[in-house]
Image (cartoon, helix red, strand yellow):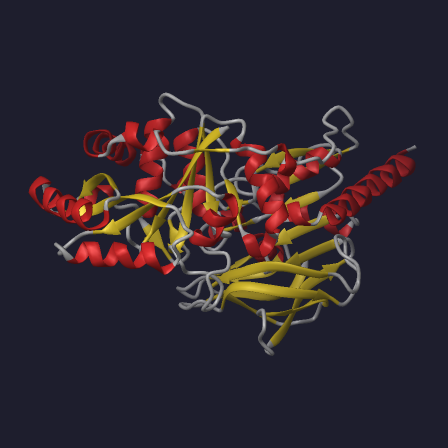
Length: 460
């Protein structure tokens, strides 16, 4: 048995991220806390790691499927004292107009209790009507209580609590006052990534003080335990003692969008992952035979990436020599000919692909997508179908390279080409969770081993 609770919000901006981070940080002072995030978000998950010291896992029903989602949850939750799951958007907001993949949907699948975060500013008795709607909309969702965000003061909170207790009979775990110093900085893809926030500690110290002062932690710890059934534990064979090949992966302020379970899968299959920084290092790590460049914000660091000519050359030389490589979104942008920022400044990049990346002021692609593989690539075979998501403000100018994906939004006719191939390199705007595609990762690792062996043969 283990403890788990979901922190859901009435709507985006209600305060669920603030409350989730505060609870995770305070509880981590005494317990081992396992964080989770509903949906595909990388940025919130990185904040979770910062406040708990533990990697967060994404619970994304669309990309994982129900069985993989359960396996991933129970595998990680059973090793913790308590798991805190941060929801996504409003509690019932799922794919398109459905509840599928929503916080409520995940809570039901995992049979875990929910604490609803309510923006209580400028409300009195109406707060009961609002919460009642969430309780009655789907009575199978176990809403155990509420936390009131942005309450005016202690007197306002007491009034709200009286209404909720009288009208609904559920627990009120506490509140957070409205205070600008608790606000986290944002930009075009949500929160500013934690890796760019070296001075963030004071904000969390203030948040923890408020959580401990205004929220009843002991009552939250008394939520129902859940059964961490072994039925859904991950059964992937671990081969940490059988490392076959080294794969370098980009990790710094510019590139840090990775799913924990994707990285773990590489290691389970037999790869040793070696981090490197396209910003700070001058060449790829010695001895690697593969390359993985995840998403991030290369447009924010375009000038610094451009100035690191030695790393750009090292990456280009390796890929041109046939080293297997996989790049997603920000990593894909890094491999194009150049990045042009919103001010019109153009910075040369690695030049693997002969087209330019240009930033725009609005989202170009947003949300879940499906991709049909139309040509073999380093990960997938022709005919494979994959599920992922796109979230970017940039466009590319020029389509001279071979593509291996036809991409479309689920249920929509509009389609576009992606999955650009150059030798043994695949680069795409589509983010995927590799945990769902174990055979593809095995195929990639095997290609890295082949590359390693061919190089060794040539050296001999």
